[in-house]
Image (cartoon, rainbow, N blue to C red; front, side):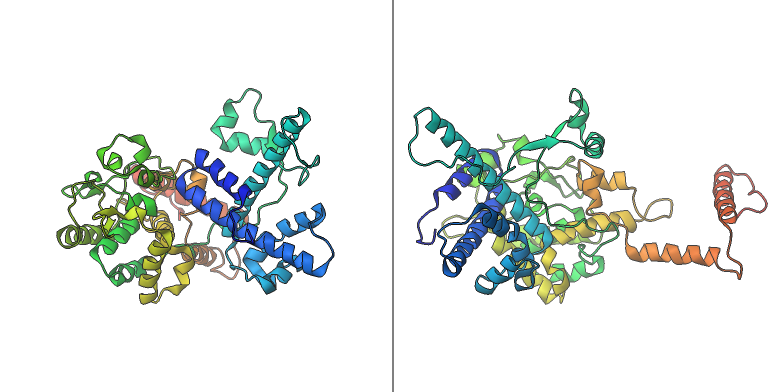
Length: 452
């Protein structure tokens, strides 16, 4: 709080997350709620300075909360007066829309927990088991309530969710959205999140240790997430076959390497979800990984007899400490320094995750195939990235705009290459004749006269 003492509501929120959420989610949600509470405190001080009020009215509170993502993203350049006024005294972190959206998810979870506790206290007070003032009205009307699905929402849920498809009578209700999300859908042809493929070798060379070179070469070669690389065990690597498997630690909690960790460290193991253990290592990053892995194991790795995590870092009194226990800011600093040395500041906002985007874009657009074409089908990219749904893969594997532009220019040259533009029927005929020619060529028959 403002007096430096712990806030009971925040502690309750952290305890509630402890029971249900993985460690990365807990850290992220607690960080966002802490920022929100600081923001709320600043808003309260502003209210006390400018009015005679000692507490928010509910309409004012909703306005303050509603302005939170605007303050996070735009600060003094925000749309709402509240965001701009607060940013003048409490500087905005100036985050991206996706980060603000995640923060609002945490805030909504915090507010719903607060409302649930209020209702529980109200019920206890009604039977004489609690004393003290309990507000009889909701903090924010509609928070945590449900509403009927629209016909379109119901159809979309049936299409995308297996669980919705097996529910008797189909889905009917959805939680009402009191504070809408703020992030817009990323354009399908936007590949800006992907680290430039041809710049990855320079990035890997910029790291100062063989450990870091091997870690990030692995991420580039397999498209794996950071925690999947950092938690890798030696047994998952087959040097002779040059393969790597990514295995969910929660699928084998009895593994000696996990049991060797103290409970507090074991709790920090993470797994966002991966549908397959198999990986496809792409070149030249695969060679870089195995080269630097050998050098790392030979010159930097500290044998300790405790566990079999590949990547480690040194801490006094704890030799061989697994790298996944290293703080996120420290991990980010290592990556950002290498990126800056490679003169690639433009991709820093995406951090190491940009390597996963790069992998998806490469597989979809440029991966050479045995038939002479380039780019794998989306379902195959989905499998290699370990996604459960194609929609998740489409956030990473996007068609390169340069390729789309080349196809468009080629099509325009065919259609408008003469003074008289081709009619729709002529274009349709040309497309059908080309398809027929391809089929007959595959059958070993001469192409039909007039085909293109």
